[in-house]
Image (cartoon, rainbow, N blue to C red):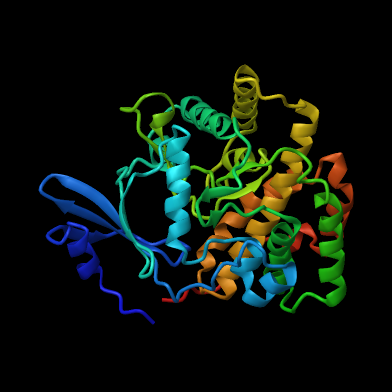
Length: 368
């Protein structure tokens, strides 16, 4: 492993005398610290290079991706800080507020980036900010992002991976792999795994028929910053976008309106969706609204099934049962998503395989 010294990197980058204040962690392996020196402020991203399995190459087959592990299968960036920087530069090039990159050492996993402060959407909304204002602004960001088709490459040597069936199915597989054992105290049977995957494969087969756009993948109130002192689209700061892929224009919109961590009323969700559609039409984007709403239901169901599996994995594998407290909201989203007629077969499977009284496992004692 390469020797890692944040002090040496900071000195080389011109921040050697800065004070370094660690920030609380989240569910990822990245760590952040706030830098301050002589009136300057920035963030240090510290991504240990041995903390995650590597992503796959652009040409890797599904079998080769499976051999490399979950990050490769699901098209996650892993410890690849180069991808974070490439996405940031792409977003900034579209006129969106991604952090400016001040310095990076990709071999060691360090990046110094612009500090947007502490004004997370989630926090300012809790303090009484207007939901309509913030959610409409976020919808306008997505409209701008979707004005152009996804690029083949974010930068030379950095392809934008497709959010393909292999990735989407790997994510829904998390539900049978991690949630079923949590709910029933036993591994999922082979029959359960195969039926679940076959049903998802059937509904996802047409998901990529439309034009692909850049998908942030975690576009929600914990990953958006509200900066009202800036103008227009610059008011919405974008973070945590390193896992961006090329996929459905519906995905980030439902990530915003079916948030796993905060309640979004049906009225607000509908107003946000309508604002997105109006803004898209105003800029000349042609959308079939009925087809788009069906795609929203599909992408919402896929995302929420994935989140159920991820929260169960955080509990069982990582000793973080606090995420189970979020499951009632996520299951509520998933149940509403599955009410769409196109997802009837999946809804029947979930009702039979995971009755509602099994959808809220009892939390275990948290590690650490």
